Image (cartoon, rainbow over all chains, first blue to last red; front, side, top):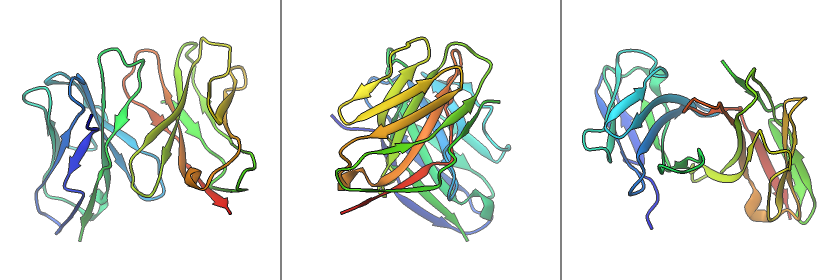
Length: 114
Length: 114
């Protein structure tokens, strides 16, 4: 079975541009998470979806960041007016309904803002 | 907020030897979950082992085992018979009883010397 997939693998953009990062969770996983991993750091929580709704978005750093999951499967993380400080690896993870709290991570998207 | 501390930025081990990676955490909860994830250069976070705080018995997965000291809030990972494929970044993570986000440490880079 396929794992969590993320596209693109790498994204280079210019300061001020808009970007979208996509996450395809494992089929049947109801919970989906976005994390951000800056260089030399551990991942930091951004947002959590249970089904289609954002159950916890307390980790989003500001209103330039937004995420959707309209049909309860694929999710898109959207970043407006990108800044150089947004450069990081963005990781997506998913969990099944009865996972024992285990998360399965994707390979991440490395975002570079020039 | 919970904090997770990994005090060893880098560790090395001879192939076939044993190495222990340290992790401490801070929480006021009595029931929670702890995890060790491995992140190779491919960036994908891979679950190594997990421990439920209510279980007194230390978790074991083949060559990987933990030393969970609840009173000391310590959760170290022991890798026995180290293999070249064990080389990676290792992250310790904490999840509270009702939360959905993981709190990660800053990671330990493990090098396996042939």
